[in-house]
Length: 384
Image (cartoon, rainbow, N blue to C red; front, top):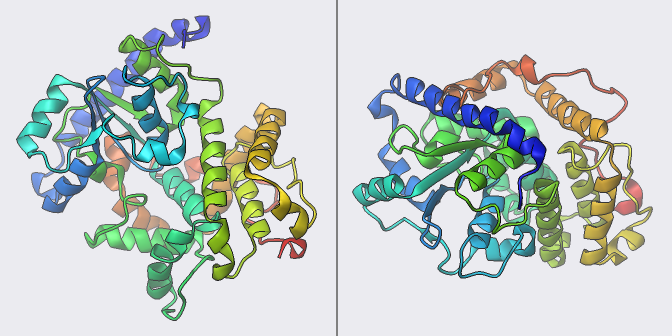
């Protein structure tokens, strides 16, 4: 991956961006009381740290902040592999890479501190509003049977007092946010896709060399790889994060295909929800409709053809359209949150907002939306 002329021009600004992030973090960490870190976090942090011994990189994985993408990158930059692009690596291989990177679950805390000092340490974070929104889209609106059968049931019991279902596929965004926020505030265990950024990596006690942000994933990744002299070893295609999201989504949908009917919805409906999710994420324009007109037609499409259809739709989407999609869908979701739930979220994720310099005011993420367009539609009757 050779840096473009435009990227070379941006290098001084990118260097300053990373310096400022570390400066803000250090300043805010001085205000954090040591007792705000629970002993249970250490176990979680140890699991999240991935020691890529072949490339001398320690990466702290935060789900919904580009973690699968970066796990693939760790494999590409390892000299023992022949990969040249993160997109060459299947999702399951990204999560279970053999000995390319090793979780540090069994290491002592002193050893972890020592390794993070000696190796290049990297973490990526994400705005709490958008991270929870993305988690809801991926785990509840889009097909995700393991979550429908586990966290979905817990949320239904907590938020609806409903405990007689074995598969809950209709968790709403307000239900998820309220459940997660209450769990964080009570120091209850929370599944790692929903727990705050700071609990994943404990950055007030571990000194990370690079703090990237999902909002600037492509530029930040390019800068880090250039700083480590790894640009010639990896081919980072244009729109790699978007294509990565398509690849992951298609694989996961078809992987679950045989079990979807047990949850009471059709596979065609699941594909429709996935299309809507990618529109909400700003990967496909909302002006490009779901291309299959019947349940039979949708369920006949192969995994390869559906991935190709999504990539074509992404390529045909206008840049302004998909940018507006992201803002509009987030606005629609935030507008569904009762004010008391917003305040609870802000308290639960206060350290995330402060440590990583995210604006806590929900109005900063609100835009005017097309009232006639709904991003989170129910499945149309022809797909049921």
